[in-house]
Length: 210
Image (cartoon, rainbow, N blue to C red; front, side):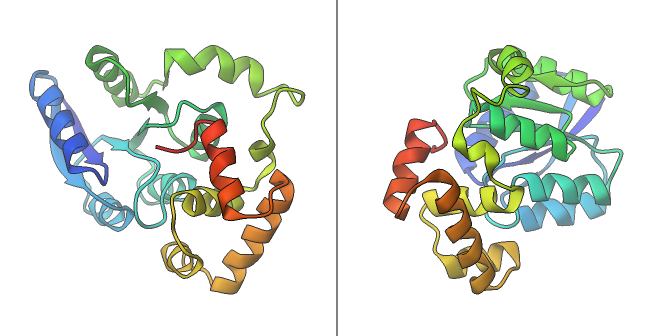
């Protein structure tokens, strides 16, 4: 039996996952979390094998959260379930310690297979991303500009394009507003944009917005 913690800030997504997992006898949804802080609390309590994780939630989400989970509970396998079919996001998640990456438009059968593989200690990459991940990750000519961002800059970038202000981002990442402002300045330089509106347009072109 694979015990699963589902972490997603959308109630409808959690409900849908509950319904899918209820049809599979060897998979058991034992708990849920709707933000990063709840994930950390549940991880410390233990009692599950696989964390089915959304990359974009309130709190220290994404790469930082994956690293925290891996540090707190090395035996927990992280399977990312994301809206983003983006090679850079998948690559960052895997490098941070995730055992698998899957997009939310996947068929239920693919999700179940992914959970089983990750739960047994294996790895799983969304079939639509696997080939691109292998060939694009080693290619500098085809890399998008946001691939040059540091993990922290990337977190700030995603938060900005989702409409969060500097103070809110600072609180979520436990940084000073000045530090967040510095990250914002640097990432905008790297992406060659002059405003948050330009950032949003860039993110939309790259398919990084939900």
